[in-house]
Length: 132
Image (cartoon, one colour):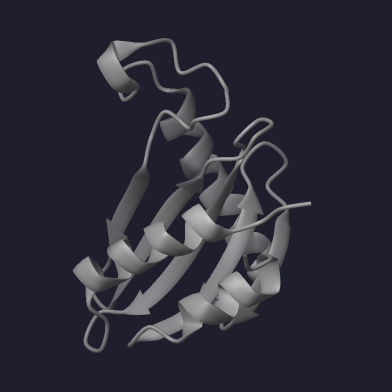
């Protein structure tokens, strides 16, 4: 079972991968980062994507069955996909035995990356990730 560094390196092996982070969406801190960052600053990228992830995770409208978005062992949202003119940002929430407040963020080049493949593989990586 891979830890943070191994999981991020695994994500970077995907075609078109430019950068990958494991982020705590409560604090906005990157728990790990590899590759490039949009704008050149991994910590800013982590903090900004944490805002997006937090809004999605706490949204009652996006929770299964329209629930209250409460934090538990299973995140209420599976993943988020943001597309830009030249890239994809895939945010995959990670289930943990404690509070599930972390996510994997993968930045893909739109011309080289395969969004469907990245979504499948990032889900597999998140399922195997060992935190602790």
